Amino acid sequence: MEESNKASDFNKEFSDIIDDLTIDDQVSKIEKTVDHNLSEIKKLIKLLPLIKENSDFNEYSKKLTKLMKTLVQQINENNCNKTKETILKLFGDVDSTIFKTQLNFLNKELKK
Image (tube, rainbow, N blue to C red; front, side, top):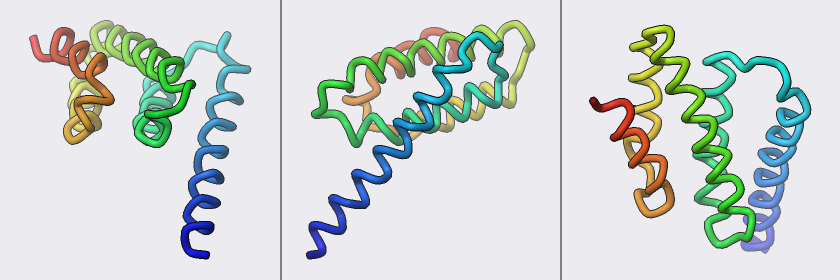
């Protein structure tokens, strides 16, 4: 019974995150703010460990990298040191095997 509840909770959380991301795709023509990009990055950081064995993993990993590139561009254009600290903190204790691409990108682009 407890295992069934855990599976149900996982499915609900997964579904909620996917729904949020799908809704956001519908408004992609609107320029996204730094806060919005940070929010999306946080969602994807939560999602990717849950789907690491799923066929959708690569798609969402690429989406995370794309959001990070946009955010780094915004950081560089606007000299946002607080945002830079925030994104580095978000990736401070993530699983390096799951987020290898993103960690390499951050090390290259932000730790100059």
